[in-house]
Image 1 (cartoon, rainbow, N blue to C red):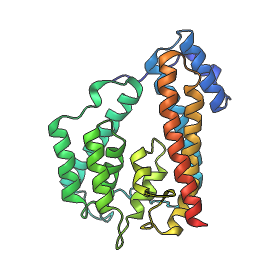
Image 2 (tube, one colour):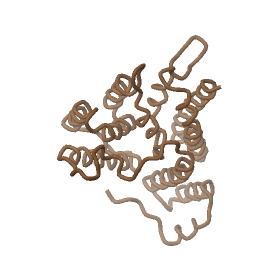
Image 3 (cartoon, helix red, strand yellow):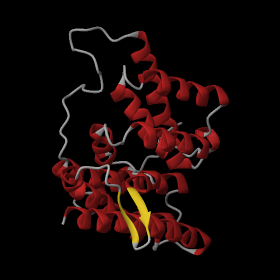
Image 4 (cartoon, rainbow, N blue to C red):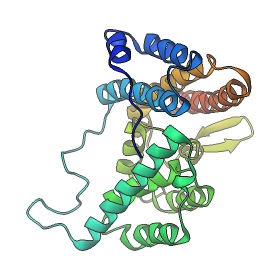
Length: 262
């Protein structure tokens, strides 16, 4: 699908503007019908993502090597299975990007695609752990409730525990500049009589290290909420409600993380 584009004049007018100023201008263009809804969605998400990426990269505590997504040595050839999994991951990312920009039905997985996802994750959780981690993070974000449920349950059972917690998975999830799903927050919290707290399966030192990332993700939600409040009618009502729910969830997690490390 062709990505939305701005005119030469519109691109020139964006030079030197802050994120907030860019979003305000984008809203004016949409209001004046100078851009359509797909362009509005595409550029608002793109600019917020870029700004978030700068902050997250500056605060990321888990620096990864270039090409670390390959579990094997650089002196080894990529296996057929690794290649298949990477192609599948790229396909999922493309579907998500199209969905965000156009809210199209093309993001829906076929039964064959969903079963292939399950197969890759279950059969390669130990042999190609980093690729499986990428798939699980995408699966938690993907607009497919069945896939979300599978990934949430798999993470609960395989990525945290009294004897092994995959901190690379959790660090990669919070370094993601795109979108941290609410399921990720739910998986890190446990509900008690006095509220929600960080699951004590996580080491306090790790939680302390990702607090800057949680803050960066929370601040991104603040920007998304501000932008949603510029909208009008039913679209504004729906978007503001959704953004408020996400912002509240991030605030609950941040508060719990700070208390856990105090």
